[in-house]
Length: 146
Image (cartoon, rainbow, N blue to C red; front, top):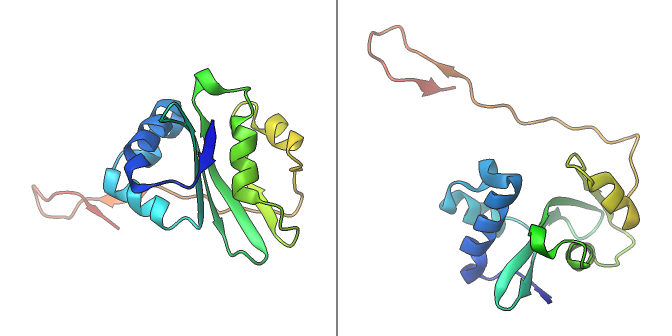
């Protein structure tokens, strides 16, 4: 197994991995996914036999704050240290950076606790909302986003 930064040629494999593991709603559009990855300050893939079996991405200012946004390992490769290796690669060992993440998937709290993460009493979030769609007063008008 090799952990490395994502390469442009990995995008479709990563998108397929994410789509098959509960992230389809976030990776459906290939161009939008490529943009998402390009705007991430830290990305990593786990590769076994030239196949992407894990992916992680984070946003980080490299000074104070980091947000681990995505971590996925294919079901057949879990419990082999790949998730830990991806997190270690992304987070590194800079003790000046406070890392945050959302741990709402089954088993996530326990997994991240083993890596030194702890529940926070100070974090807040503002969740995204789907765009509101309205109809114009004109008959036959197509919906528009506001």
